[in-house]
Length: 272
Ligand code: PEP
Ligand code: MN
Image 1: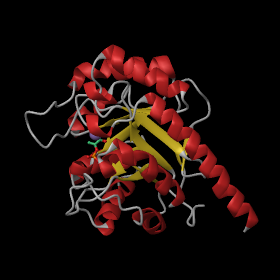
Image 2: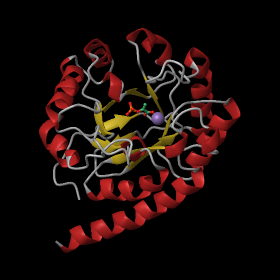
Image 3: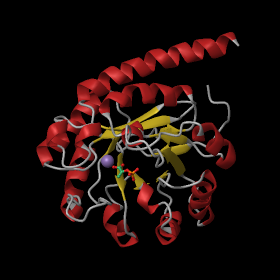
């Protein structure tokens, strides 16, 4: 299925001796709300995702919002919520880091640092994250050439962090029918170029929950190593990105479909 091999990034799983491997032939599902909001809503989301087979939990407490009056995230107050969801579910936590000064506080509760599209060009942040050994999920900037994305990854690698996962999240196009244009052709190309595992974010890639399912299957077929998907128990209550969030039930249906498609793709490989 994967035309090109990548390195394997191992994400430690709380309380388990076996890490979660990204890039070793498995298909990793990272899911959760865009932003962490109310404690019980977040725990409900985390627990249902755990029950439905997600491998890691996403949720931002520091947001990079285009408009200053939009919800900016819970900030430090959200740290305890991330820690509690991690304790309850045993899922590794993926959260966005927007400022190197937050790293010390985030360190005890975060398993993967997400660098958002708006920060792909923030080289000082990348250099700091490069000094950590913790896995980094590096999103593609929405105006970034593949070359620029690869160079951004190089900042992390050169500073000494080889645990880099790339995430295609769509680039800016001209037609507002989707929030971004999900560039799936980048998946095999950037993997071949960098040798790093690549996952796809169909939520920001389209901005539309009805397109998350088909684009997830397309990402799988394009050889992605996994997905980053926004899920909220009651999307209409989400404080950011409500239009693109799946419910946990919809996530579960998608996961089953992914299983069936993976079986078909592997059967095809076995015949080849
Ligand atoms: C997010 O993952 O919620 C996010 C803000 O994504 P991006 O940086 O790709 O816009
Ligand atoms: Mn979001």
